[in-house]
Amino acid sequence: MSKNIEFTLGDSLNCPACDNPFLHQRKVSIFWRVEDAEEGNHVVSQLGHTLADTSMYGNPSPRRDGIVIDFECETCDAEPRLSIVQHKGATLMGWESARKSL
Image (cartoon, rainbow, N blue to C red; front, side):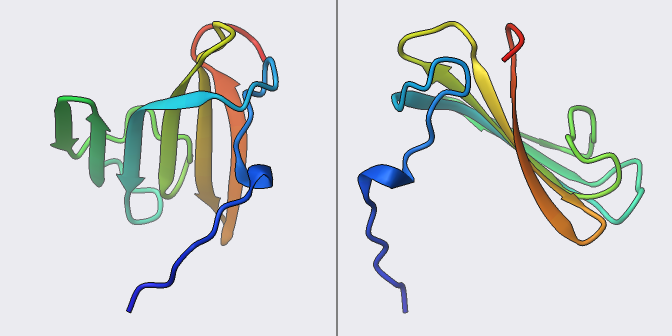
């Protein structure tokens, strides 16, 4: 049974470069692997294209699983990238930019 999720204005992700809340998700990359394995499951999906392979290239986690969401901001050219990383039992999140320093 699914649970209804209610969203409020405070739930939005804002661009880490310009603080604009109007971000568009462009690509999602998901990495799963056994700890320290050189290969695992890797799925990349974006409009009109999905790729599945065993490469860990681009995994934000040096040892475990990771998720990367590439965004486009409506008001700046930062191209923010949100990484969610599993490391030593903790889940960490952080921003970087595909184009310039945030």
